Length: 306
Image (cartoon, rainbow, N blue to C red; front, side, top):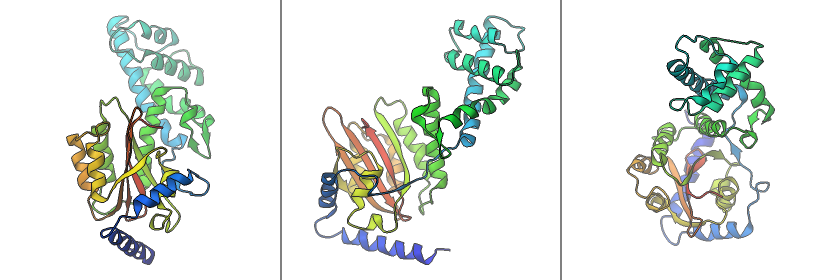
């Protein structure tokens, strides 16, 4: 059942959206003013939903690192020691000699050595060692966390960094309120299809919320610029034109067919505002941000990030 505050918010959104249908769209002047005033996270606060605690991430590491260890050990048995049953540091040291099927030998060796040291063991079965990865990696994740959230900038393993970014997307979507008619999980999956194999920088801009009424007032673009990578970008299109402009950007989705599902989702009534920002030139960037019926802002970036 909708609360009174939700009904009021929905009504305000409808009025705000209707006011932009006729006459000159005031959003361009408001964004120009916001861009000129500069970005201030302190003055224009927002709440993230993408926090990942060590306890949330350690099982993910165990699954991925465990798969790497298992793959390397299977190749080791196939090429070097068919009768091998246990993992040791000497076995892990030979992973680097395997030419095919153990490309991430460094991660596999570091994992084997780490779990063996953590459990003060000289040898372990693959199953037992893999089951101990989460326990081994947790202190490392805690050491680079602040207020229960892992600081990705302090991770020294690129594999961990990208795994964490994917986990952040999933955590933010799980915590966000679902806009009616829009499946955020499907939108994320479709975005990953759009960006699969691209050499362009790209990012799913995870949902954030703002103080009550922030996205309905004249300072909406100040809040958006505080929360998203919009430095140096200019508001190019609004409403449905924003979706089409972003979708067709050369150093963006470039009319990728996989974006069609996202385009349809963003045209639902639950999406109340749509903004396409762009920067062209040697370092281009394209950002599409939407505001949904719950006052959540989220979107997509493609091109070159800041």
